[in-house]
Image 1 (cartoon, helix red, strand yellow):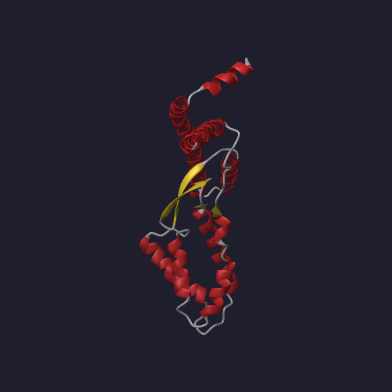
Image 2: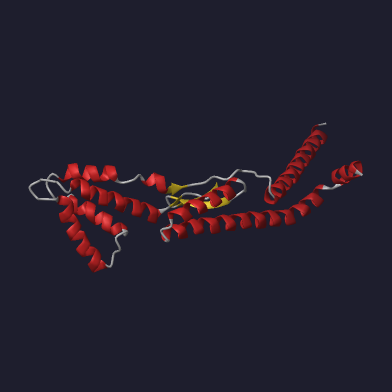
Length: 224
């Protein structure tokens, strides 16, 4: 039976293989889209947990997302400085709210450390905080709004001897890279999607080899 199965496959004509490729391409595209949609759902769940300020849930959902991406073929189109490019994986995404919360905690810690500031203008941090809090109330900013952090940095720069204090604050702020995530998926994975794509590639290779052989035989007849 195995020999007969192999024999029938080899007896398939090239045009028949081309016809088989049509539904295979459709199946491949559908399965790859399902994997992409699932990745997007898991990534959105992480971002939602970030917006909900639930660090424990963020960690759990990141693990679920990472496990899925590492074990499936996930093709994604990402924006690279205005250019669209295809990548395998999630592409870069940011835990913006978690970073802002961490930055605000760092600013609060900086306020305690600078409270004994004896520069001629008094406590620079306190002066900047007083100005920015008024702006926050007037503009409806919450305390985890990035506009508040930008306001603080801008106000501190207006005072003499602010450079040293600004350096202290910048040094206390967490690196944004800690909140940047980008999980890469394998080019091929042993899933339904992976096996269907592999079958498609095998048929394409067979068609390509047959075309090369056909061209070689035609050239041999011409120059014989």
